[in-house]
Length: 166
Ligand SMILES: [Zn+2]
Ligand SMILES: [Zn+2]
Image 1 (tube, helix red, strand yellow):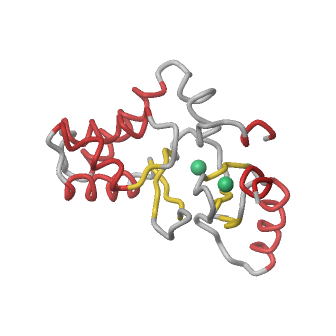
Image 2 (spheres, rainbow, N blue to C red):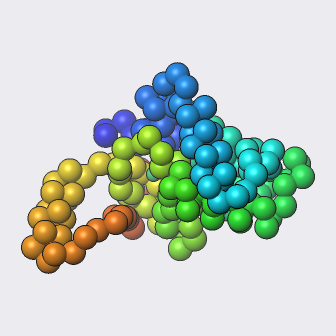
């Protein structure tokens, strides 16, 4: 966790030990292809390009960033928007709120569950696992007879680097 602070890459569980695994990219591409078939949709080159961009990214991506990056390949805003929705429905990507209240997305498949610390000063998003919190949460869920499908813990504040500048 300590070096997460010095790391320029935001996705600390990726790609170092997840994406580096052989066959990882192909596996997620196959999942997407199969889910598209279930929905009677085609694995177009544009949809494939958007997924590939996510698979290579080392940070949490906004819709605008994806659009700007893929525009030279003739991919429009609407396609980016709809494909993000599709990838979310297929549970391949997940969202996180950023420092400006916007949404960013990251690959969810095959990465461990983690939470985020969002720096309101430099806008970086730090990933961390929080086992104690997960444990307390499960306990309370059992107590309240509530079945959780998913959750996100996002803490907004100032990172170590930014607060030491102050
Ligand atoms: Zn910061
Ligand atoms: Zn993340």
